[in-house]
Length: 108
Length: 119
Image (cartoon, rainbow over all chains, first blue to last red; front, side, top):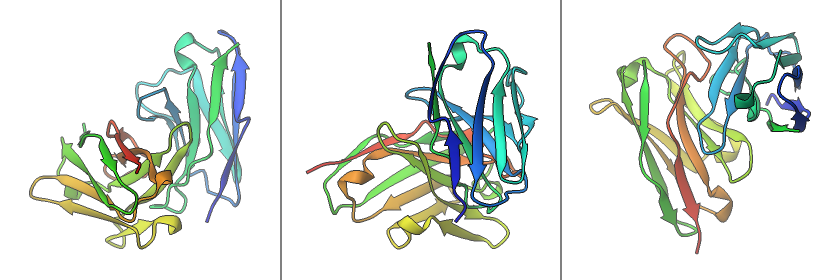
């Protein structure tokens, strides 16, 4: 099974900061990678799909990149509503949809 | 637009079974590939299983094989997830989720159903 490892697991940042989260796969996943944002008590929300495509309605400060086994989510200028937990998910082995362990982003 | 409405919270004893429902609106359930994801308290997302439209079968994560069933009632556009032989570490919020037709990424999610397993 494909494993995903996110780093860091926790980060502290301030409004206006540029933030980057990394997701490493145990084998190549052909850019079949998504990023989700989850706030407490809510279902996850799709932000990025196919590694770099922005889901409709998602602010352009969110971007994704990567290939092979390494992928990143970048928030160009952190806004107050962006403090949340972020998860990557691979669907290269669809319907299997493994998630990373999550990155909790907190206000410094 | 797909809308998923899940059944309410459940409290079960160890060894019991639980069935969670997910009512679909906006699309016929036959046009979708339903998945189930769970999240233990304070923990991450865990994919449990989902429908493979290419092979017309449901695939489960290895750790749930033999203990979970996922079914659909096409007459009511409702998906069901049943988990048997519950243990305390099955306490979690259970989500149904589905990609938009023709895609693989989970665009649509239910609101979640809390299942608490406690003696």
